[in-house]
Figure 1: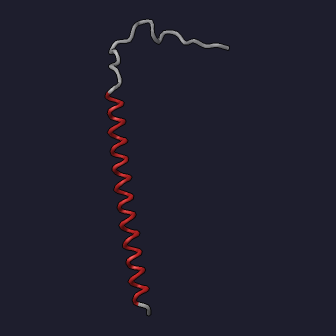
Figure 2: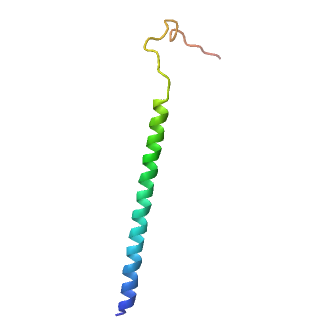
Figure 3: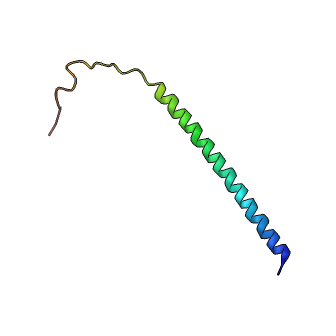
Length: 64
């Protein structure tokens, strides 16, 4: 049995696991930044009037 081969394999697996954990952490940070940006956009929307004018929503315009 080759001990150095087993050690190399264990090191490679450990490095892969570390790289995967770093990738996941970066991905989660990107999602958090996108969520913060989306929240800022939603909060920047103008206020919608509570009462719509009476003439809105009374007719359906269609064309043939």
